[in-house]
Image (cartoon, rainbow, N blue to C red; front, side, top):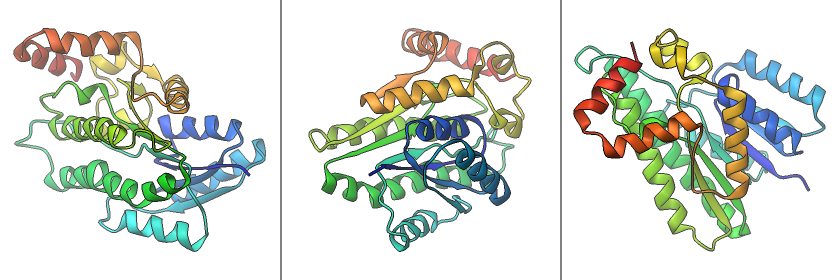
Length: 256
């Protein structure tokens, strides 16, 4: 019997490429994203290439009841999840004095509250079966608080800490938790955040499929943390050695 992966934020970027890797390995998909038209096209494309079952759910994951709604849909369809991929996310760039509070609260809701709740709902079923894999897409920003990007990096710091702590809680349960920390990745993410022409995305960007492949491999290997890309590994190492004032200057330069 094929296993099933629930993946959020699937219609572009890392999430889109991750779907391909799961599908190639005959894993059924439960895809969750906001854009219903893109989800429908994605389902048709994947089903034309791979002999797997695919369910889609179009929903705004910033809504407070999103995790409950997804859990209810899974129960109604009698679908058990073996792989949970928390990928959906967005950014808000700018000085905290000038950024939009509603966007920031939605970011906290999506990238902290929703992920925590959905994991809480699905995890007991994995533990009961003594099998499960959870993949959380964090960021190199998990390690490096960044001026003009503080809420986003704060959510990613939470996600890394949450993943590492949960991994320890689940020792010998048969369930693993992997936090992947990519840097700049070519996708619609940067365009939506208004930083696609920044220094970081001009010179240090990685291909989404490369990041997805490394993420999938880390998940299946049961790794706790995976920093994707040599430059990103060096950047994280430097963040431990350099003073905060210098790290802040470098971070700001990267976003301009």
